[in-house]
Image 1 (cartoon, helix red, strand yellow):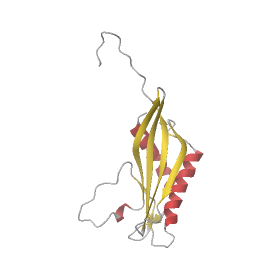
Image 2 (cartoon, helix red, strand yellow):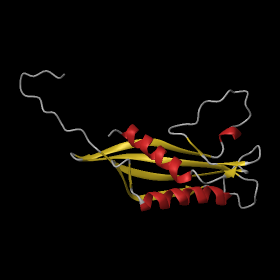
Image 3 (cartoon, rainbow, N blue to C red):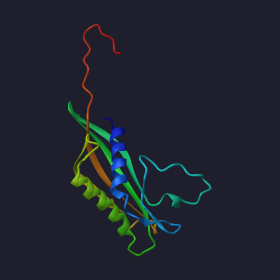
Image 4 (cartoon, one colour):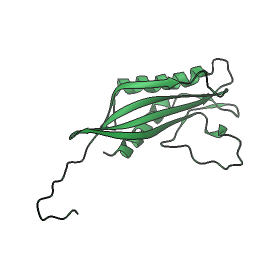
Length: 159
């Protein structure tokens, strides 16, 4: 039950949560957000922007905290990017964040292993948005298993 397994389980859950949501894409039409754990794939420098990536949801491992002998957490930020030329285009990113928040609060355990801990924090950029692109994110923390400490007895070598 590693932090990477947690990240992958969150990505699977996000795919299910957002499968029926269709959002505007820059080239016209609509589609569900793509879920990409970690980072968006690299682009050719000759490409002008990342419009083909929109909309997206990126669960990204922000780190982990080992607090006590049996208390460990994975910190996962969930980044959301949408596209809309509408004056209220910010509502799309807010809608995605709210769907994720509500779904995880209803079912706080993913893959029967990782439990969402409160608080969940979310941010939606409004003043600094690069119109018509809209960005926001959630900050989450998930309980993960911690390995059992192995104590060496005098004379034993570390494996």
